[in-house]
Image (cartoon, rainbow, N blue to C red):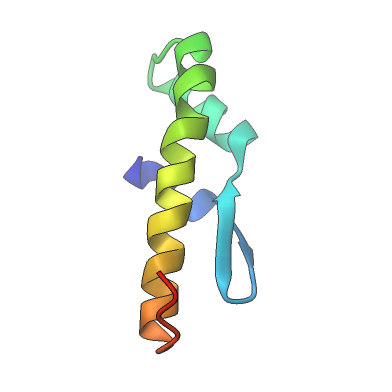
Length: 65
């Protein structure tokens, strides 16, 4: 999933998710079944968004975890 680091959707001060079109294209290029990618990426994305936003809040001194 580190390969998707450059495909983040951002708003000021927060991460809102991945560019799923790019994520699915990357999965396909890597030989991952698109159906499996489409089923699993949203679950992984939710964890990634939560963790990155926790880090952003902690760095900003606004710890509302």
